Image 1 (cartoon, one colour):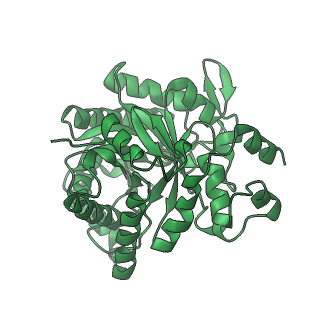
Image 2 (cartoon, rainbow, N blue to C red; image 1 turned 90 degrees about the horizontal axis):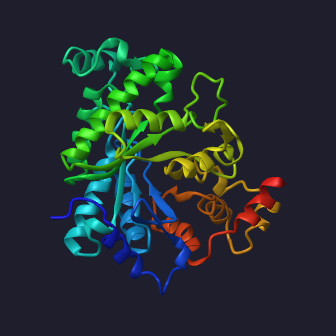
Length: 368
């Protein structure tokens, strides 16, 4: 039984859309064909109507040429994972898509609660995590909100598989590890990342995971002197220590949008003594970049300067212009976009019918 996405499966998925969508919509990365637009999930726990709308939207996205789903849980709830799991179970049962055709990503690091945010959250953490031996008190950052101890990640990963109803996940991200670096310093941070990567390598050996990476809000955007800065080259070295030359650290996810362009333009990474941007460093190191926050929390669906939208004459809406920019960035496999309704899906995936914008067009826009 196939437990994860495969080259043949994603190629089979791509082939079903070649007559309807532009060939450049799909790109081969790490042996998988990624749709250039991925579905991000952003739900607040307890909102049953929103959850149902999201399930319908995700099903429509998968039926429309989007095979990359990021079940990014929030900092408080794993509702996102449960909704994705319910949608996938229904799609598999209908036969509308196969497991090996869909790339499913998830993440761990922030403390999650069973359902809604408890009134005594600190006591909850003390009882459920510290007293239970899941994590020591000094392993938390951002108060008690963030923890990447191997035991905590193991617990979250197993819970993730249950929520998704899957035997394996394709990509599992360590979420915002810069929180640990900023508060605990680089030495402790590196020890914790090494242990986290070793835990994920063990999940790969157990055939419950295909690959892993780092999803960061700020770590790849700030300058090297910032305490939150993440060096991609150093992360690759830690992965090599954890898993040898055949390690499975393959992905980074960072904000990449018209509003947050740092990963494309800031030369804050160093590889072999050369300064370069994150997307350049990733290409040098064999790491795939996934763009997050494509619509900048929805703001770019409303506010895009006319001269910027004019740079993408194929776009009929501001959201489409923003998505076209992000999915066309060099080195980016997929740009994640929140899709909470069928209307969002139709608007967002209209870009799949167009060729990606050329690097020359993006460079001219950035010069402005």
